[in-house]
Image 1: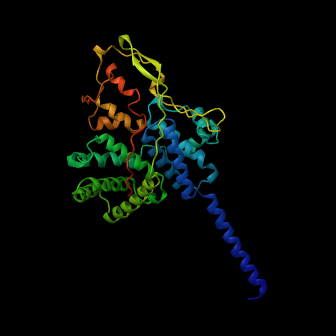
Image 2: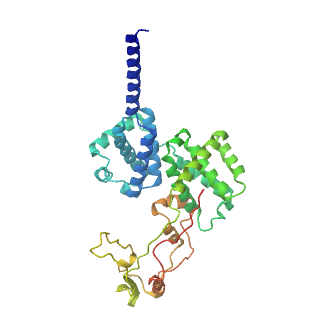
Image 3: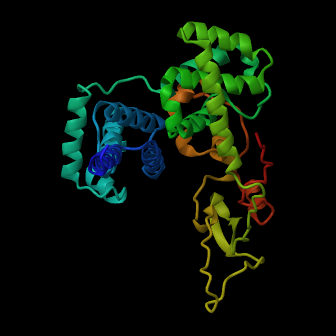
Length: 365
């Protein structure tokens, strides 16, 4: 081969490599997909929407990206359009975000008209079929079967009701949805792997129940084993990302609540001074979040009503709880009394109880 021919061969090979790199740049990478799903998860919390909305938005996004080759610069517009479609499909009418507000507060970088145009493109590519089963739907089914067939499943977790336990699994599932490595498995396989891992920690006879669910879902056991390994590794990274020594700084309130006539609460200065930053200090003053900043007009002590067992739910995130799960497990009519809001109980708020949650040991998986 002459030197001129060698130069031509090298140049043609270099051109092919550049074309391949350009093709890769034109497609959405797995890391870019994971980042945009995490961004949608933040929007879900920001607009206080259901977990089903995020699960459906992720499913619509993956289906669309599997149909067309999208440029990364359009990814945010595609994702916010899928999110808006999912919200209109799942949420109640009064909970659906206004499109202009969604485009403005999400900082997606596109206008309302651009979102509507992208929405129409997505609907055309998906043949207007938005009602598809998500991994969260299968999680509800498998968890309901596990709780009904193994009532002892939650005996080791006496403080958690079935709906609270499902809320914990839902949060873990939404974290796994943002992992592109798990896209190789079906939504039913991912949900069963999570339920199987949870049952392994709670009951000794988890394997027969897992096999029973596997046979009902008609799935391959080898794929389930592989999925379990990836899910366990991904959840371990979630646990290890938590701080090993969480420190809560308690700032005493400057006001306390005292009871007056007819059950009216009023503010009085507290005898416990709180640490304030001086104006000369460069650190800003931290605002105090407390219900003591408001005056509450409550009934008199003689007509004080006991709160229901739903007060226990306040320890968890509100958006992880919704009426659909509680209706699934018939927990709407809880009659257990866990406390009262009478004037006699307000004395416990005068410096004896910290508004910070108690320190919990972190379990490293």
